[in-house]
Image: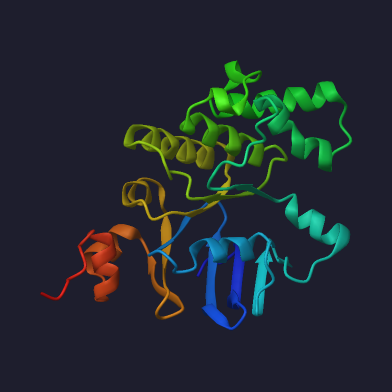
Length: 254
Protein backbone atom coordinates (compact mmCIF):
# COMPACT_ATOMS: atom_id res chain seq x y z
CA UNK A 1 0.00 0.00 0.00
CA UNK A 2 1.26 3.48 -0.88
CA UNK A 3 2.05 5.71 2.11
CA UNK A 4 0.38 8.81 0.67
CA UNK A 5 -1.81 7.50 -2.16
CA UNK A 6 -3.48 9.70 -4.73
CA UNK A 7 -6.14 6.99 -5.21
CA UNK A 8 -7.57 4.70 -2.55
CA UNK A 9 -10.17 2.02 -3.36
CA UNK A 10 -11.79 0.61 -0.23
CA UNK A 11 -14.01 -2.46 0.02
CA UNK A 12 -15.39 -1.90 -3.48
CA UNK A 13 -18.04 -4.31 -4.73
CA UNK A 14 -19.34 -3.86 -8.26
CA UNK A 15 -21.53 -5.59 -10.80
CA UNK A 16 -24.70 -5.43 -12.82
CA UNK A 17 -28.03 -6.41 -11.31
CA UNK A 18 -27.44 -9.58 -9.31
CA UNK A 19 -24.20 -10.36 -11.14
CA UNK A 20 -21.30 -9.43 -8.85
CA UNK A 21 -18.06 -8.95 -10.80
CA UNK A 22 -15.88 -7.59 -8.00
CA UNK A 23 -16.26 -8.14 -4.27
CA UNK A 24 -14.51 -6.16 -1.49
CA UNK A 25 -11.64 -4.91 -3.63
CA UNK A 26 -8.93 -2.87 -1.86
CA UNK A 27 -5.85 -1.18 -3.30
CA UNK A 28 -4.05 2.16 -3.54
CA UNK A 29 -2.21 4.04 -6.29
CA UNK A 30 0.83 6.14 -5.41
CA UNK A 31 1.43 9.63 -6.77
CA UNK A 32 3.41 9.54 -10.00
CA UNK A 33 2.96 5.80 -10.41
CA UNK A 34 2.18 4.01 -13.66
CA UNK A 35 -0.37 1.55 -12.32
CA UNK A 36 -1.84 -1.19 -14.52
CA UNK A 37 -5.09 -3.11 -14.06
CA UNK A 38 -4.99 -6.42 -15.91
CA UNK A 39 -6.75 -9.74 -16.13
CA UNK A 40 -8.54 -12.06 -18.51
CA UNK A 41 -11.62 -11.21 -20.53
CA UNK A 42 -14.63 -10.52 -18.33
CA UNK A 43 -12.54 -10.10 -15.17
CA UNK A 44 -13.90 -6.61 -14.52
CA UNK A 45 -10.98 -4.43 -15.64
CA UNK A 46 -12.99 -1.79 -17.49
CA UNK A 47 -15.80 -2.02 -14.94
CA UNK A 48 -13.34 -1.17 -12.17
CA UNK A 49 -11.96 1.77 -14.15
CA UNK A 50 -15.46 3.14 -14.77
CA UNK A 51 -16.15 3.01 -11.04
CA UNK A 52 -12.86 4.78 -10.31
CA UNK A 53 -13.79 7.71 -12.58
CA UNK A 54 -17.29 7.98 -11.18
CA UNK A 55 -19.25 6.71 -14.20
CA UNK A 56 -20.82 3.90 -12.19
CA UNK A 57 -21.93 3.77 -8.57
CA UNK A 58 -20.61 0.72 -6.71
CA UNK A 59 -22.75 -1.76 -4.85
CA UNK A 60 -20.67 -0.83 -1.81
CA UNK A 61 -17.33 0.72 -0.96
CA UNK A 62 -15.46 3.96 -1.64
CA UNK A 63 -13.17 5.47 -4.25
CA UNK A 64 -11.07 8.31 -2.87
CA UNK A 65 -9.37 10.66 -5.34
CA UNK A 66 -6.80 12.75 -3.50
CA UNK A 67 -8.76 12.11 -0.30
CA UNK A 68 -12.20 12.97 -1.70
CA UNK A 69 -14.88 10.31 -2.21
CA UNK A 70 -16.02 10.40 -5.83
CA UNK A 71 -18.91 8.05 -5.05
CA UNK A 72 -20.81 10.48 -2.82
CA UNK A 73 -19.55 13.84 -4.13
CA UNK A 74 -22.13 16.08 -5.79
CA UNK A 75 -22.26 19.44 -7.55
CA UNK A 76 -19.17 21.63 -7.28
CA UNK A 77 -17.40 19.10 -5.09
CA UNK A 78 -17.80 16.42 -7.75
CA UNK A 79 -16.66 18.78 -10.52
CA UNK A 80 -13.56 19.61 -8.49
CA UNK A 81 -12.70 15.90 -8.32
CA UNK A 82 -13.39 15.36 -12.02
CA UNK A 83 -11.02 18.18 -12.94
CA UNK A 84 -8.22 16.20 -11.32
CA UNK A 85 -8.67 13.29 -13.73
CA UNK A 86 -8.49 12.78 -17.48
CA UNK A 87 -9.78 9.75 -19.36
CA UNK A 88 -8.84 8.13 -22.66
CA UNK A 89 -11.42 5.56 -23.71
CA UNK A 90 -10.53 2.45 -25.71
CA UNK A 91 -11.85 3.77 -29.02
CA UNK A 92 -10.35 7.22 -28.49
CA UNK A 93 -13.89 8.65 -28.62
CA UNK A 94 -12.90 11.66 -30.71
CA UNK A 95 -15.72 13.59 -32.34
CA UNK A 96 -15.48 12.91 -36.05
CA UNK A 97 -17.02 16.24 -37.08
CA UNK A 98 -14.38 18.27 -35.22
CA UNK A 99 -10.72 18.93 -35.89
CA UNK A 100 -8.10 17.70 -33.43
CA UNK A 101 -7.78 21.22 -32.05
CA UNK A 102 -11.54 21.46 -31.50
CA UNK A 103 -11.60 18.01 -29.85
CA UNK A 104 -8.84 18.92 -27.40
CA UNK A 105 -10.44 22.30 -26.71
CA UNK A 106 -13.77 20.77 -25.62
CA UNK A 107 -12.92 20.27 -21.91
CA UNK A 108 -11.62 23.83 -21.75
CA UNK A 109 -14.89 25.14 -23.17
CA UNK A 110 -16.89 23.16 -20.61
CA UNK A 111 -14.85 23.76 -17.47
CA UNK A 112 -13.09 27.12 -17.93
CA UNK A 113 -13.96 30.73 -18.75
CA UNK A 114 -10.92 31.26 -20.98
CA UNK A 115 -11.27 33.19 -24.21
CA UNK A 116 -10.98 31.36 -27.54
CA UNK A 117 -7.39 32.44 -28.14
CA UNK A 118 -6.22 31.11 -24.78
CA UNK A 119 -8.12 27.84 -25.26
CA UNK A 120 -6.59 27.36 -28.71
CA UNK A 121 -3.12 28.01 -27.33
CA UNK A 122 -3.57 25.45 -24.55
CA UNK A 123 -5.05 22.89 -26.96
CA UNK A 124 -2.09 23.33 -29.31
CA UNK A 125 0.29 22.89 -26.38
CA UNK A 126 -1.33 19.57 -25.44
CA UNK A 127 -1.17 18.36 -29.04
CA UNK A 128 2.49 19.33 -29.14
CA UNK A 129 3.13 17.20 -26.04
CA UNK A 130 1.92 14.11 -27.94
CA UNK A 131 3.69 15.01 -31.19
CA UNK A 132 0.64 16.19 -33.13
CA UNK A 133 1.25 19.93 -33.29
CA UNK A 134 1.27 19.81 -37.11
CA UNK A 135 -2.11 18.01 -37.23
CA UNK A 136 -4.28 20.55 -35.37
CA UNK A 137 -6.54 21.13 -38.37
CA UNK A 138 -6.95 17.48 -39.32
CA UNK A 139 -10.13 15.50 -38.78
CA UNK A 140 -9.87 12.24 -36.81
CA UNK A 141 -10.69 10.16 -39.91
CA UNK A 142 -7.55 11.54 -41.58
CA UNK A 143 -5.31 10.06 -38.88
CA UNK A 144 -3.92 6.62 -38.17
CA UNK A 145 -5.15 4.65 -35.17
CA UNK A 146 -2.04 5.50 -33.18
CA UNK A 147 -2.41 9.20 -33.91
CA UNK A 148 -6.05 9.08 -32.81
CA UNK A 149 -4.99 7.50 -29.51
CA UNK A 150 -2.38 10.23 -28.99
CA UNK A 151 -4.95 12.91 -29.77
CA UNK A 152 -7.30 11.35 -27.21
CA UNK A 153 -4.52 11.52 -24.60
CA UNK A 154 -3.99 15.19 -25.47
CA UNK A 155 -7.69 15.86 -24.87
CA UNK A 156 -7.53 13.94 -21.57
CA UNK A 157 -4.70 16.28 -20.50
CA UNK A 158 -6.55 19.48 -21.47
CA UNK A 159 -7.31 20.52 -17.87
CA UNK A 160 -3.88 19.53 -16.52
CA UNK A 161 -5.16 16.56 -14.50
CA UNK A 162 -2.99 14.87 -11.91
CA UNK A 163 -4.31 11.44 -12.94
CA UNK A 164 -4.81 9.97 -16.40
CA UNK A 165 -6.96 6.87 -16.88
CA UNK A 166 -6.32 4.94 -20.11
CA UNK A 167 -8.65 2.12 -21.16
CA UNK A 168 -6.86 -0.39 -23.44
CA UNK A 169 -4.61 2.23 -25.09
CA UNK A 170 -2.83 -0.36 -27.27
CA UNK A 171 -6.00 -2.03 -28.56
CA UNK A 172 -5.97 -2.35 -32.35
CA UNK A 173 -2.43 -1.02 -32.75
CA UNK A 174 0.49 -2.77 -34.43
CA UNK A 175 3.53 -3.59 -32.23
CA UNK A 176 5.62 -0.61 -33.39
CA UNK A 177 2.81 1.91 -32.87
CA UNK A 178 2.03 0.33 -29.51
CA UNK A 179 5.67 0.64 -28.42
CA UNK A 180 5.66 4.30 -29.49
CA UNK A 181 2.59 4.89 -27.34
CA UNK A 182 4.29 3.17 -24.40
CA UNK A 183 7.24 5.54 -24.77
CA UNK A 184 4.86 8.51 -24.78
CA UNK A 185 3.21 7.33 -21.55
CA UNK A 186 6.58 6.97 -19.83
CA UNK A 187 7.73 10.39 -21.05
CA UNK A 188 4.56 12.12 -19.84
CA UNK A 189 4.69 10.35 -16.49
CA UNK A 190 8.29 11.44 -15.96
CA UNK A 191 8.15 14.98 -17.35
CA UNK A 192 4.72 16.03 -16.05
CA UNK A 193 4.61 13.85 -12.89
CA UNK A 194 1.22 12.48 -13.95
CA UNK A 195 -0.18 9.37 -12.28
CA UNK A 196 -1.36 6.81 -14.85
CA UNK A 197 -3.98 4.13 -14.30
CA UNK A 198 -4.03 1.85 -17.34
CA UNK A 199 -6.33 -1.04 -18.19
CA UNK A 200 -4.64 -3.48 -20.56
CA UNK A 201 -3.89 -7.13 -21.19
CA UNK A 202 -1.01 -6.48 -23.61
CA UNK A 203 2.00 -8.11 -21.98
CA UNK A 204 4.62 -6.14 -23.93
CA UNK A 205 3.06 -2.85 -22.79
CA UNK A 206 2.69 -4.08 -19.21
CA UNK A 207 6.39 -4.94 -18.98
CA UNK A 208 7.34 -1.66 -20.71
CA UNK A 209 5.42 0.85 -18.59
CA UNK A 210 4.08 -0.63 -15.33
CA UNK A 211 5.56 0.28 -11.97
CA UNK A 212 2.98 -1.97 -10.34
CA UNK A 213 -0.01 -4.04 -11.41
CA UNK A 214 -3.08 -5.68 -9.97
CA UNK A 215 -4.53 -8.74 -11.65
CA UNK A 216 -8.26 -9.41 -11.51
CA UNK A 217 -9.98 -12.77 -11.89
CA UNK A 218 -13.66 -13.25 -12.65
CA UNK A 219 -13.89 -16.58 -10.84
CA UNK A 220 -12.55 -15.16 -7.59
CA UNK A 221 -14.27 -11.79 -8.13
CA UNK A 222 -11.31 -9.65 -7.21
CA UNK A 223 -7.56 -9.16 -7.05
CA UNK A 224 -5.48 -12.34 -7.24
CA UNK A 225 -2.04 -10.70 -7.60
CA UNK A 226 -0.36 -7.35 -6.98
CA UNK A 227 3.18 -6.11 -7.55
CA UNK A 228 5.93 -5.80 -10.14
CA UNK A 229 4.87 -7.72 -13.27
CA UNK A 230 8.28 -9.37 -13.73
CA UNK A 231 8.31 -10.61 -10.15
CA UNK A 232 4.80 -11.97 -10.55
CA UNK A 233 5.89 -13.76 -13.73
CA UNK A 234 8.95 -15.28 -12.11
CA UNK A 235 7.87 -15.82 -8.50
CA UNK A 236 4.08 -16.15 -8.23
CA UNK A 237 2.83 -19.45 -6.84
CA UNK A 238 -0.64 -18.91 -8.32
CA UNK A 239 -1.05 -21.02 -11.49
CA UNK A 240 -3.43 -18.49 -13.09
CA UNK A 241 -0.97 -15.65 -12.54
CA UNK A 242 1.95 -17.66 -13.92
CA UNK A 243 -0.12 -18.73 -16.92
CA UNK A 244 -1.07 -15.13 -17.73
CA UNK A 245 2.39 -13.59 -17.41
CA UNK A 246 4.12 -16.45 -19.20
CA UNK A 247 1.48 -16.46 -21.95
CA UNK A 248 0.81 -20.16 -21.57
CA UNK A 249 -2.13 -21.77 -23.35
CA UNK A 250 -4.94 -23.38 -21.40
CA UNK A 251 -4.66 -27.12 -21.16
CA UNK A 252 -7.46 -28.72 -23.16
CA UNK A 253 -8.64 -32.19 -22.32
CA UNK A 254 -7.98 -34.72 -25.07
